[in-house]
Image 1 (tube, helix red, strand yellow):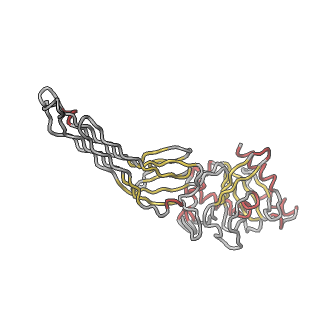
Image 2 (cartoon, helix red, strand yellow):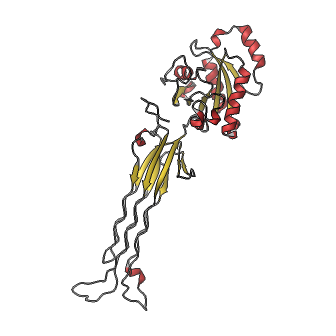
Image 3 (tube, helix red, strand yellow):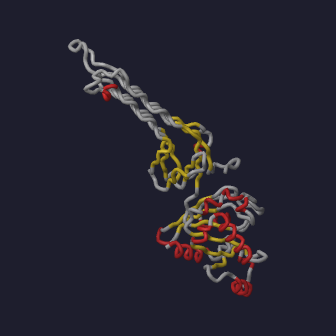
Length: 330
């Protein structure tokens, strides 16, 4: 997804081509001492490969937005005196952690999760063998060599799934971006209309004794998102990498229980494994409630999930929320 004036890019499609293997040499030893020497043709060099490499300093695929073609070097041909051809250089594509690479058939080739992790997605062609490999007792002067292996090419899709400890899940305009801006130094766009957040935002939440955890603000989910409504499943994939899901539902909702069930249903439709993650339910905008209303609402909330009443604007329940999240994470 790419939004105008945004530097967050989580989907790119690139044409990749590896290097061709160099041809083996058909050569016979000739010097001032040897007039009719045996075969001494060297092997061709191996073609360069296209390699995906994980970088923890990166957080977006922005640098690949306009890079539509990635080619590796061809291997050089072998030569006489058993000289091997030079191998082609690999072409490295650096990607943020959490990137998945797929081929044209949507088959997952690799998933980058560690810094410095490398995967060859398009292997370079092998170099051909020189004629010295083909000599035998019955054929002492082979006049042929092996040609190099051809290059491989194709279109590849790279998708980024945000890596975070806690993912904020909720309907549009539920106060997710406001909560992120209060708990972290992130500055997401905040406005009083749905779908203000169009791309995921990340922030680091400081905790006691210099501890911290990463929180991700995911664009709002609406009923039917798994079928493509609203922003669809485009951002549901970012939730897959979060170890804990923080459901945020405003206190002025018509039915908090119903909204929670709708959110669960959409996650289940997209990927049933999401329901196995730890969950916390936070009732936002609770500064408009008095103690009696809070007690009344508490009785109707789901019993199988930790719940907390918070208000980002009034800074209500922020410390308690951090404690609850840290306890759930650990």
